[in-house]
Image 1 (cartoon, rainbow, N blue to C red):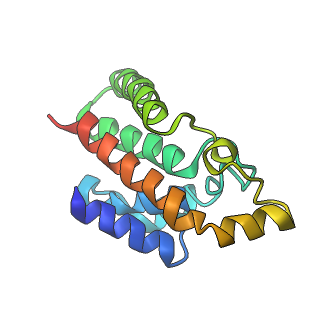
Image 2 (cartoon, one colour; image 1 turned 90 degrees about the vertical axis):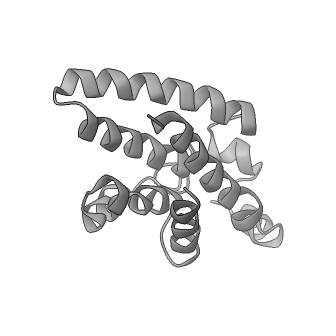
Length: 147
């Protein structure tokens, strides 16, 4: 788990968005194409299309849970049901830790404005908030996928 977390954080600081960093960190572990994962998650950073909706680390985590269950279950309906259950638990746990799944609420700023972008940079929110959301998401995935 620590290796996946380190990989995700490293990727996040080296050009990937939050969703991409979470999803691609699991490519080797869950045996899926990292290039495809990078493409699939490209629009989910910054709260889905940088609209500050659902946190990208959360969206990436939901994708990981889907991949995990697709590998685990032969039938789509079984994978889908297991994924939905895990996403519901993840949502409860992440919200308990951070108070929200919403990027704008987590950051308490609108980084789509010049003032918000300055606040994001000045308070080093990438390190102080986003990286924690990524690390916590990976811990929650780990808790949910232990067999």
